[in-house]
Length: 146
Image (cartoon, rainbow, N blue to C red; front, top):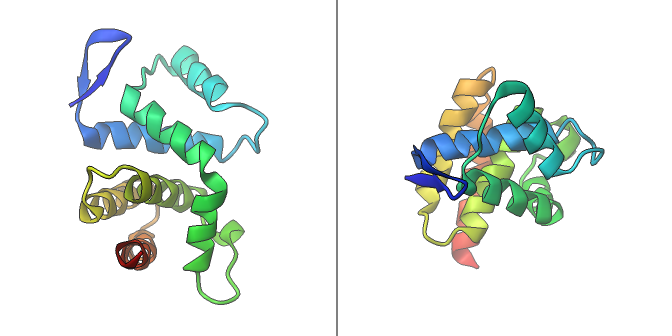
């Protein structure tokens, strides 16, 4: 369960927490660094009465802090001639989330992060799940070998 220290009765599953993190990351992709994560979170809470659990915020902060490194990992696994700017915002948010978990959340098996990313991709995109799965499979092999 994912808890929020601000509200004692707020418990959600890790899957729901990932979805919350995805939403934050997706919204961040439109801000072009104009708004901070905190501002995006507050806007979502104010306009949609959304409350984000601690895990979702932690992951979004971690991705934001390590975005250059995470994007370099993604770029290194793209087909020749492809640039990260060619990836849809949905797939990019999903990839960043999963790679952050795989690289920095040591208590999670890679397969869980990959499976959850594929499910998020199926739910929020026009089926780019094969692309997401392929990139994350290659990333997981690299991380396991290092």
